[in-house]
Each structure stands twice: as structure tokens, then as C-alpha cells.
Image 1 (cartoon, rainbow, N blue to C red):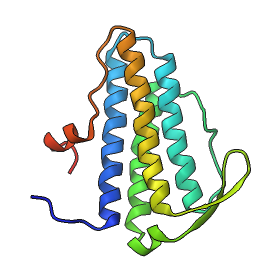
Image 2: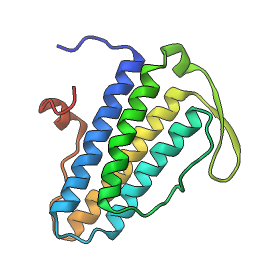
Image 3: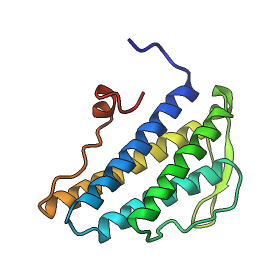
Image 4: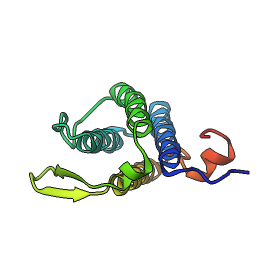
Length: 160
């Protein structure tokens, strides 16, 4: 039975799930004969958005466009690197830090303030949303999309 975990450990677990799900989608795209242009566009966006939000949380300047176009190999490299960066960011944080406020500029140059835990939840949900779009595209092309449900990853102990 799982005990109650603190917020930092909870987000580490969610970002491990996110990384696993991204890798599953990429593996599915590589193994499928389904047209990959639109799914790779979404996958590239997922990974770029994750990097952009991490940079915002760390007070850094945006280093990548929000809608790049990567190959499957580049997406896989980005996904692997991002998990390490998210885990490092989260491990250096505290529950109080996640509840504080950070200022950042969005892609339109507008200044906003948000709590890091709200941003983290947004990143996870945003990625899941676009993985759903990828799954719909793969299915509409007559192929079976990657099975990336959170509960599946937990039941199979693919994410601890």
C-alpha cells in the first residue's frame, strides 16, 4: 500500500509517468507505419513546452520555440534530458517552494505570476492532452496508439 507522499515526491512521480508516456508514444510512432508528421509536431511541442515551463520556473530566458519540428530521435533525446532536468529541479525544491509565487513572461511577452505547483500540474495535463491528440491521429490512420494511461503505468509498475 502506498503511503501519503509529500508534494515534491508526488510531482517527481508524475514527471516520471510523463517521461514514460512520452517514450511510449515515441516508441509507438517509430514502430508504426502511421503518418508521423502531425504526431511528431505535437510530440515536439510537448517537449518544447516542458522545457519552456522549466525555464520559466528557474527564471531563465526561453531557449526554444514553443512549436519546433523535431525528428523522433531528437524527441527521444529531449524527453530523456527533460526527465533528468525535472527531477533535479524538483529534488532541490520544497513544499513551501512549490506554493510560493514565480513571475514569468509568456510567449506573447505578457508578465504573469503563478505558483510552481500550479505550473507543474499544467505541464503534466498539457502533455497528456497532446498525447491524446497524437493517439487520436494514430487511431484515425488505422493504427493502435500507445497505451499511456497513468493507471496502466502504475498497475504494471512501469512507474513507481
